[in-house]
Amino acid sequence: MADTISILLVEDEENLHEALKLNLELEGYEVSSAYDGLSAVKAVQQEYFDLVILDIMLPGMDGLTVLESIRIQHNEVPILILSAKNSSADRVTGLKKGADDYLTKPFNLEELMLRVHKLIQKNKKLKDKDTIGDTYQFGPNKIDFRAQEATTQDGQKIQLSKKEAMLLKLLIENKNEVVPREKILQTVWGYNVYPTTRTIDNFILSFRKYFEEDSRNPKYFHSVRGVGYKYAENE
Image (cartoon, rainbow, N blue to C red; front, top):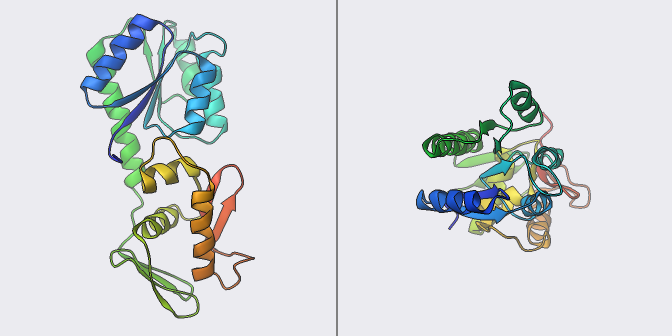
């Protein structure tokens, strides 16, 4: 179900992990578990999450290194740090490295749930902010998202599949920005664990045939190797 909110819980203390997982699931969240830093980094590379709850003291790779690794990949997933370190210097370090919130242990469960809810709502508002209307025109091309129709660069009218229309809308709403493949597959396909990149590549190839004057030298639809895809429009 595409509307399910998924959380990655990264905590090595088993009793606390199970208690948090249970309480988050009771709130209706879908929770994936990681008990060490390396597993957390791999999980974020392979799946889409709406939030990461990240303990700092982890075996192997510590939480701050996990945080840096996630941000280096340009992944903007909201991250809430849980830490036994409660000095203001520790909080500042966590926030500087890219955490969205910082909660010290021991914490009040109700406060944690409130912070989780706020971060997810804030992220949802950011994702929804740039919605475009039912129709969009670029060059000689025109797209009607509601009717799932398009007029191509050579004036032909074509019918779009639902996923083609959704992918076009997502790329155009993020004009001139690279949209990570994880975000595309979560938004358009609603997957939590993804198939190969080839799935999106085939759609991009179709868009180039429809909308580019020269599909081998695209002006609008670009693949950014190892990161994602971009709709570009030079004003």
